[in-house]
Image (tube, rainbow, N blue to C red; front, side, top):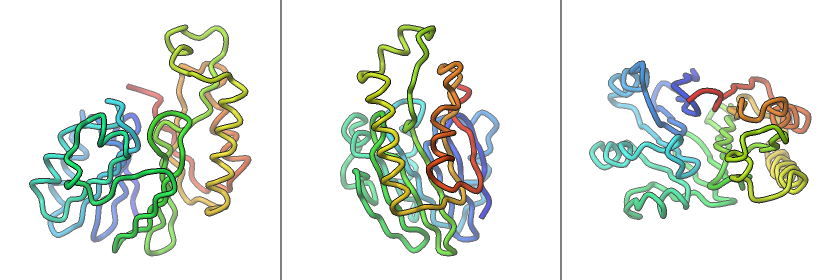
Length: 214
């Protein structure tokens, strides 16, 4: 398995007979296009953690409708907010959802923001965690007020929710081969708080930072 970083929070897991695309938004270097152009004969899965525009590009719904073997797995809020035809997705992801395909088993978990985060177990046992916008959004007091206003719980409530989600994941997956996780500069001195808590809770072999540039 090869893991390609595209932009922002988008990664592509490439196997011999499938591509798994997480949270596609933009492809300024044409890297995703090249992978898709070379995907003839492969199954392609687009996983969407939530509806925010920097995690979902509406083009993928059209791509999946036009290509046999291309599959859409959006979160429940993406279907609702982006008005996706409910007959199009292979599955709609909700908390605790289990989706089994010929290539992976997907389990979805709560998020500290909207939507879900997901863990995929590939056929060879490799595990991939994509956090979406699940993080300990612990903004320092010096942060831009517009950022802090987006968080509707206290810092203590945020931390308790985040740690409870990590415990839920650890219950099923005490070890992760790859974790794609936000390292957001808007959090200032707290930007590593969530990633370090992840690493203290779950054994992670490879941590892949995301969400650090738009």
